[in-house]
Image (tube, rainbow over all chains, first blue to last red; front, side, top):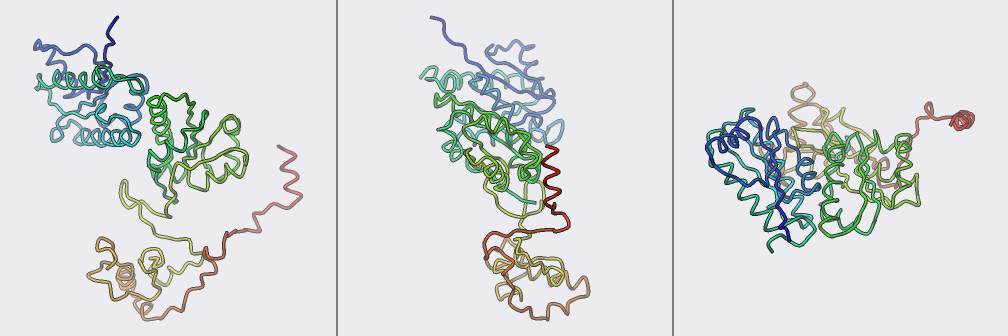
Length: 139
Length: 234
């Protein structure tokens, strides 16, 4: 029987977020191929609806990766992104859905180690919880 | 504008759970401006409720729609087919919108997704404050343009009371004393004599106490002849 691969969606800002992923790859660090990276102009561009729709369309976990909050390319984009992630987390919690399926992270373009760490964490969450509405993956 | 707030998600989820075909209808007027029931909020709610249905293993058809002004029949008629094709209408407008749909389609079940709150104004992004209670007898020309009915915790007509301290209200020290604000405004306008005048008890007959209020503008009302003509055009 084939083992179901976890589905992780990562909204990465095209400045530091995506650069940290590229640097991780260039420096030979491996990360789980289950992650689907969606490049966005800024973490602040990610709205709650994007996160919810990703979950609705089958993602097991979703993360938003923006610049470091005090070093955001657009000054407050990462802060906006975090506010929206927190809003979605509280919505999920209200509905009895595990809020840890959604997380916000920050990285600078030089943090090559950070992206594989984030992916690993979210893949673990996806594996542990499995798809929404079905018996959890490893549970 | 009318300011509303979305009901807790768990409460909405519980309300809609027994229904198979649900239309979530938002409004592009006041509730869109106060970020409670516009296009984006409708999409978010539909998506969240779909996730909840998925989580519970229920089959539920959810569709989101938005009308220009849900409190006006002409705009609601634009989505009539969708309303008739539903088991439940979940209104993301203020209570006026929900009641308009309910009155137009009395056989349809209409639930509110929002708690309608106040007549308020935006103070800053994400903050709205009440400035009018719709008492039906405006007196702000005598109070420097500040309504003591809405903004004073005791709705006093002759203030400030003894609980006013350093411009703040004793009921909540975070809140400005309305009568202090009135005093300062009248001072700016060189109309402080007004604060010395004693206001008699307010005539509340124009307020909500007498039950449902109906406002009529005769000049705008259609005659029977005009109504027939309008119906003929339809």
